[in-house]
Image 1 (cartoon, rainbow, N blue to C red):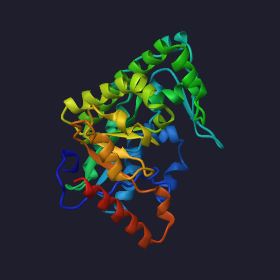
Image 2 (image 1 turned 90 degrees about the vertical axis):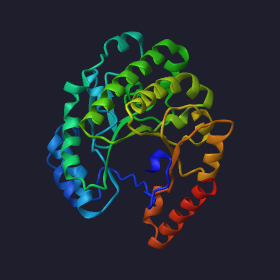
Image 3 (image 1 turned 60 degrees about the vertical axis):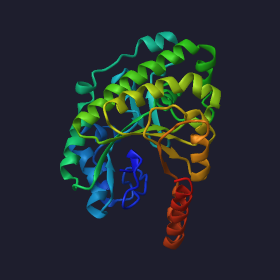
Length: 308
């Protein structure tokens, strides 16, 4: 209802949990398999997705997976080692590296994600929504090019600025792969799609608009044309709000660093943009006393109401 631009009887509150890692039952499952094995085993992925729902009556569930699953069937290997985050190998930094990648058959090569969605869907209550997701092209490309997380993204920007055609070709390939991947999720039962662009805030508005927007909007358009709502999450992208005008999404996640009313004003300025805003409680507030969490949540809702 909220993504349709209508005011629901009760506002859904977005709570981005981190794979249920705070739950002992999750840690029990995780102790027996690697993270990648967990993502690739439908029964286990469904189990850890459902675990929080057994404890809390939430509005929706987002499938347990990782934004770097698609590269694992494109020609790269994903590992998680002690002391570091996800790593992809071999890196993609030249035209020859790009040629070694391929567009997988999502229905076959990534079927385990769809199977997990089907299992979770059976366990949901009638009022609960099934959310599917993928990483947006730029953020996935950051890992594919850097090989791991980065503070400067120097290799990403080097490729984008010195060999723009190769960078854009990678973005286009990722857009096509992501469309196939998300269509498979929708067919499996996902009712809403979330597109995570965690690192896009490292770009200037001009670079985002020229190098990233086309591929990202291609995905949004394809999913929206299916009649499935799609939400775009521009991580730390407060400065990009004015560049999101014209993106074919139903919702935009607002970073906690910007006020909801100001985000609405920026997005709607000189535009007929008609989207739902999602956000934007600082997740670190969850360590605060309950009274403060409730107060800050109400403040966000009040700011959202200022512009209707």
